Amino acid sequence: MNSDNHLTHVGIIMDGNGRWARSHGLKRIEGHKAAEKSIHDAVEYCGEMGVEYLTLYAFSTENWKRPKAEVIFIMTLLKSFIKRNIDDLDRNRVRIRAIGRLDDLPRGPLNELRNAMKRTGSNEGLNLILALSYGGRAEITDATIKIARDIEAGHMQASEITEDTITSCMYLPDVPDPDIIIRTSGEQRLSNFLLWESAYSELYFTDVLWPDFRRVHLEEAFEDYRSRRRRFGDLDSDR
Ligand code: IPE
Ligand code: IPE
Ligand code: MG
Image (tube, rainbow, N blue to C red; front, side, top):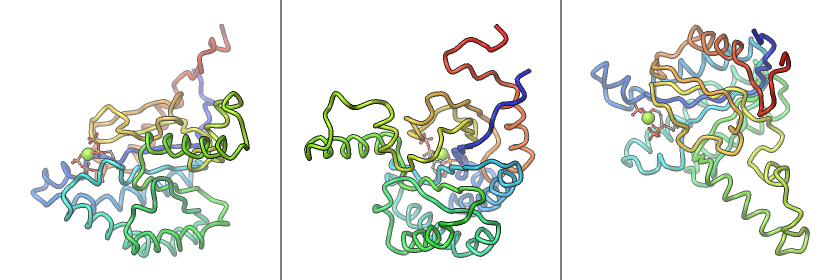
């Protein structure tokens, strides 16, 4: 058994808030509200386990298609979530970061987010990365634009582009690829999450709806991860 798999970066696709609400006879927005406890558990447990990066998929580029009232509610919740939790997160040395087309966010939540990132910028605990108005294709598109501009400006030539060039133009180039991507609620797809970075990530799917996801479920996911063999295209080391 390969028990020394590193678990440096965990990605979570937090799905199933709407179905959780419906199953409790509540409105969809109540499901988004109930997600806060799950986020709290995940941040706490990852911190305790020495995970260095936790990326939470909170809002996709496609989620803007949802009814306006739901989008406004989620954005308002984002702002109040940061306000409510910033003191605790900062005290626990959590560094808040974000990926996505952040300029698409309404000014209120964006300012709150920017302040939180500034305030926690030198913290050396868990990197909590919020994926907001995030899409993997948008990220690759934005990277392509950067590279094309560099070529236009004469700083580089097309023939010099390598995989590292593209990686260095992603939103957070210092962050290593996710070791595991967890998706709740039974859906088995990436829905545009970390497309470039997930090339060799282990995928873990659970039927548990995000608002019901607790430490014990994360423990199960980590245990499953530890039992896997990551080969990255090579042969097993005990071949
Ligand atoms: C995930 O829960 C939260 C966001 C995508 C913002 P959903 O809102 O997608 O919940 P379901 O999938 O409809 O149950
Ligand atoms: C993915 O969930 C995005 C987030 C969890 C933020 P969705 O509910 O938007 O994904 P689909 O539409 O089921 O693929
Ligand atoms: Mg969903």
